[in-house]
Image 1 (cartoon, rainbow, N blue to C red):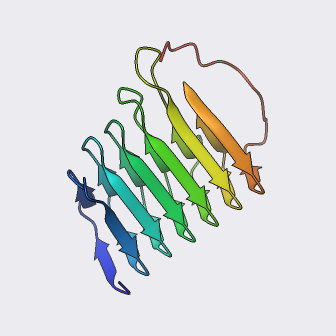
Image 2: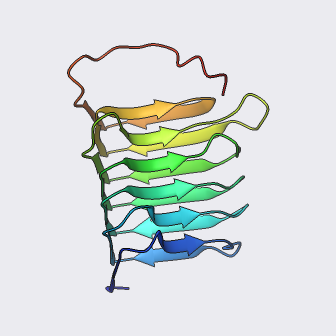
Length: 168
């Protein structure tokens, strides 16, 4: 609460278990190395980021877990590779983003990337009253998506739609 963590470690803040819930509130995470500012790697995790500032020279939040609930409220997330990334080999996760700003400043990257797999439970993404910016603002696969009252800024010059064809 109100603290700053600054590190160049590969994983600044790793969450393996948070079955009773973990709340990060009113703080700052500054990631200056390669890797991830936040790394979620367990199943059934409940994580809430409330009024957080997260900056990363690489990836801000990477999730490699199943059936987790990640809520981001009134937060500002800035990255230089991927803003939020859910790995497609893990399913059944729900991301709720409310009143937040997520910005990815790199080329060929995405503000929010939620990947699923046809053999797993669908992912869920809910974005409310937020601003998402990246070359591609949001990219999803095998994901239920609800977006309301939000602004999506795609900064790529040649905007297009195409299936990726990679089978995930």
